[in-house]
Length: 115
Length: 109
Image (cartoon, rainbow over all chains, first blue to last red):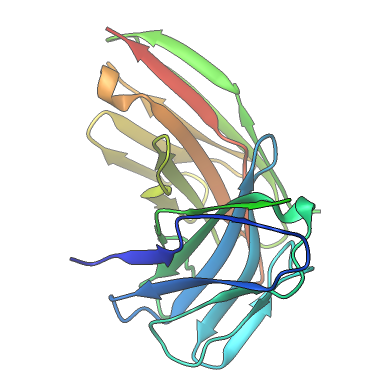
C-alpha cells in the first residue's frame, strides 16, 4: 500500500531532551515536507526537500533540523525541544518532479507534547 | 506577505443544502492553489489543484473554482459523509506552501 508513515504517533518529552520523528514514504517521491498544525494557526511548513541532500526552510524552521540522506526518509530533529514546540506534526510527500508540488500525500501525524 | 484566509470558520448544513466555502489569498507569484479535506485525527487528503484564474475542477459533489484573488469550493447536495475540515493552500513563487486555517463543515442528516 502506498503510504507515508510517521513514528512515533504520540510522544511526551521534557524540555531539552533531543528527539527525532521519523518519516518514510514508499512511493519513490522526490519532494517531501514537514508541517506543524496548531489551533487557530493552521498548517505551517517547517522544512521541505526537493530531493536527496537538498533541503530548504519553510515558514517556521527555528528549533528544527532535517536531513535527507535517502529518497524515502525525511526525519525531523528537535535538538533541544521547548514547550512552544508542542504541536501536531505532519510529514508529506509529492509525486510531482517539477512545477507545483501541491498534490501532497500526508502521513497520519505525530502528536508531540513538551513539558 | 503571503497569506491565505478561509471563511467561514465553521458551517452547518442540512443534508442536500448546497453552499460554498471561500479561500482568499495574497501571494507573490501564485504557482498553484490546492484544496484538501481533513478528517478528525487524520492527515489532510488532497482534493484539487487549480493553476490559473477561470479554472474549475470537479469531483463528485465538490467543485473548485479560481479567480485572481480567491477560490471557492462549492458543495452540491452534501451528505453527512462530506463532514470534515476543508483546507486551502497556495504555493508561492518559491517552493513554500501556505495553508489557511480551514472551514469545519458539518452536514446534518
